[in-house]
Length: 85
Image (cartoon, rainbow, N blue to C red; front, side, top):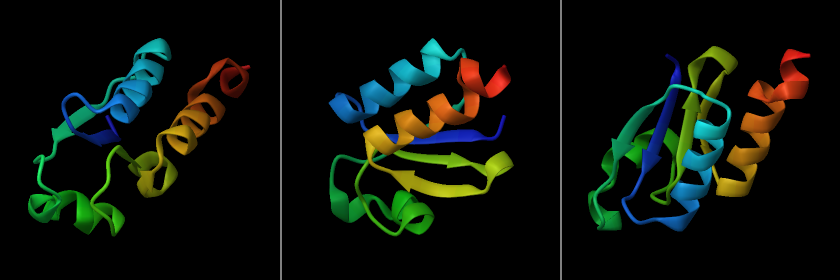
């Protein structure tokens, strides 16, 4: 599977993305990030920033998409019903 999600437990923006992933029945690898922004080195290396959620989709060249609304729209466009139709 090429989808990876960097997330924080209890993050409502992350929950929105996870709900879309589940709705589309997509498998993904979850990476829980530390609560402290100072300790989020892994997600910063991927996306250039410390906020979450961040999506990586290596099959489609997405190396670190942030902003939950952008991620949800991307997932719908790339993996939703109209993408497979």
